[in-house]
Image (cartoon, rainbow, N blue to C red):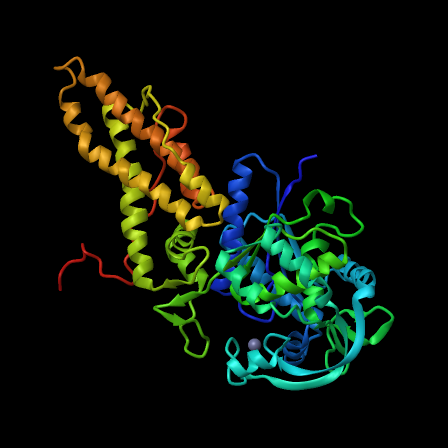
Length: 494
Ligand SMILES: [Zn+2]
């Protein structure tokens, strides 16, 4: 039986406000999912929320709620964002789900040969809910660069997971390509990080220091540390261990994560899987960060951009377009409202929106909407497919834009409106015109197909207009121009 496809996204803590980084996870996973479905594959696409840990308990207490009541209230914010960016997910997991909790208890039991109790003293970041090595703490002058808070020296009785036992297997998997990291340079960075071996990790904390989480089976004074619980979601959501369908989907074909959590996903997570005797995920896609005008996004600076604001003003496809094409999939990218609006008005409205309008308009005007027969010169799209397979979605959509631009160029060169003047005089003119317009319509249908994973609404509009052989013009133009952050060239001069 052919394995069915599975893509998973990182599950954010529910205590925060959903941000652009979360939106990027959902968007990238969705592009991949739509592409695979378009090519005939069955895909499971997981999203979810991480609902245990001290930060959540503290926030709930502040509001006078139980942690569960608090997470019931907040997880919907993430769900709303997933829907808003058009994520066509199949599974939503919450780490407070009963099935997840019982499965994690089972996982703990299975991993017992690799679990031991010891005293741990180390540098802890409350923001990460994670320990950091002396080296890492020194390199950042004792302050977590992601959270801007000092690491605390913490000493306590913990259970440990012998991640160190799996160093060789993980190194081999990364080297022979069983588990690939995209981009490749992050794989090299990770291999460098573990050159002295993976360090064992603390996987529980005493109940007095961690109140909200899954109790350790057989030792209720210890609560599972949030990472073991959270990482397990990628298999429990599929039904592991008790619902056999999980076997049809695991291993994950792609796991989408931010670059800041790669070390957990390339180290602890594979070690857990190896301890359970399971296969490793095939590809880890570590995307970069979105900066704002060259600066890191920070709540204190106040340069946070709200994906909702973009989508409300420009539409969902505009959001998907900018973040799939102008934010490189595997690197850091930069957002400014000017860049965004220029891309919207010049590329979506002019290059694509006008092109559709122009071609449909000419077919209506010269041929009463009837699209003639064309010799289909199929564009060679191997570069597009290679980019999709290589998880460089920005390069794939660049390829589509090359087609859009050359079709515009083609129309400017052959000037169908000039050819139309000859109809009735020159017997060659009518078939020639029909041929030109049919070529344009055919190319647009192909462009629509290739855009489907990226701009699902525009793609279906293109199909609607051109696919039946008779142009159907619907209400409203695609991508009407918007000038909120840049000057409107047509505005009356003051
Ligand atoms: Zn931190």
